[in-house]
Length: 295
Image 1 (cartoon, helix red, strand yellow):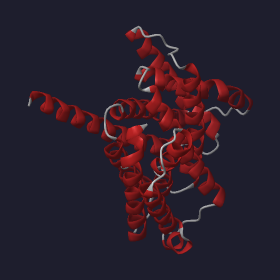
Image 2 (spheres, helix red, strand yellow):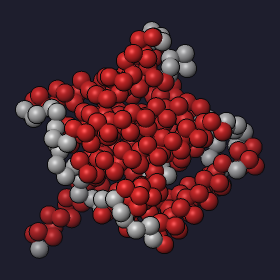
Image 3 (cartoon, helix red, strand yellow):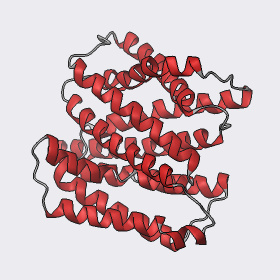
Image 4 (cartoon, helix red, strand yellow):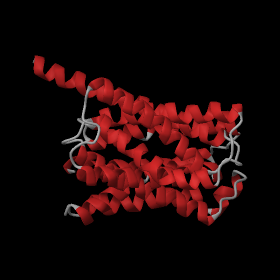
């Protein structure tokens, strides 16, 4: 009885971690959208990563943990996919309504079900096919021309492509995190993400540097702090919670993002967007319930 109660309390704790992760990630997207477009995406990702790297390195030092980890090749791969995902996500946030870019980003569990079949020999079953159909139907409902006209929005095809590339990269990063969590401390996994970003983006940022003003610096600090908090809560929450439950809770970021879009950026949420979001959510739940728990 006590053991059962302990498990329930632990699951509840993990769920709260994921709720907070969704909240903090959604606040990060607000910060990205608030920053002046004269500052390049590469510079924003660099700043975000540099702040996160400082915080994580300090935590690892206080915990007296080997900062380099064990499976360094997979850690570097996780850093690469995370960096690519973040560049794409920041681009999409800047060039699309916050609500729509967030929905596209949260198609990543559907892509994970595909990659699980390709890379770790999981069978792509009927659930996966159904998830793909529901997910794409949801996206088509949200992105069809008449729907966008109704909410007075124009979106370039390049922005849509980059948004989906961000979701794909997130899925690949997610698979590596699930693997690494079996052997690595969570803060080592978190550290390699900004470490790779800082090293790879530094030459580009140096060549195209734009000095932020005080207002920009406040939002940049917000990006770093909220992302660090989101990454920490997400990594802890994912460690022991079933994937289907985790994906459902993570989808709260769409809810939070939609609220911030309406409040801060005068975006319009209509019945088509809500219906499309529900279809994507159903696809997310179905794709996660069978595949991710085996990763």
